[in-house]
Picture: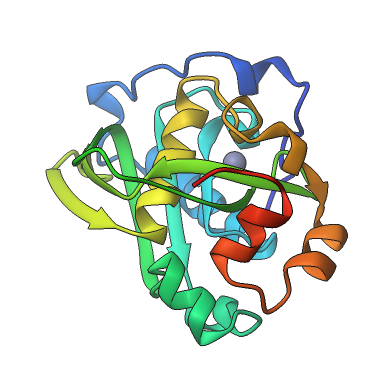
Length: 197
Ligand code: ZN
């Protein structure tokens, strides 16, 4: 069951979300919440969704980047973004730590800032530690587009949005971005918006 996605301006998107309590792990309640989030993410469609985006201030997000979402990107764009298919994952009470100093800048959007996107710098590689729905801890080290998704979703749990980190002069409607960036390399897009590498 997909539910409505909260849009920017709503206070829940600007609060620090609470830890998922220990007693909630392994419960039907938590499984149902995750199922609703996955359905809502797929319905949008999007590559990630954090609980505050459906009005629930808990430290929990889901991600999934299906190969079919990559159809509109060129092989060069996919390679530059290090974008590869990622199966559905759930991260509860996560911690995201940058690996190394390198940052990369690409266009990013958010289901809670519907219809817009902008250039956003992110760490190229991160390590995430989290728990699954049963409370089992796991760690994942990843670079490229999945690392960007993780940083974006982690921000939601801190009450931050990409618009807090973006190059504001690149902020555009999705229609503008599509028309202006289609087939262009990352370097060309940065130059178009006057962003230094
Ligand atoms: Zn978002």
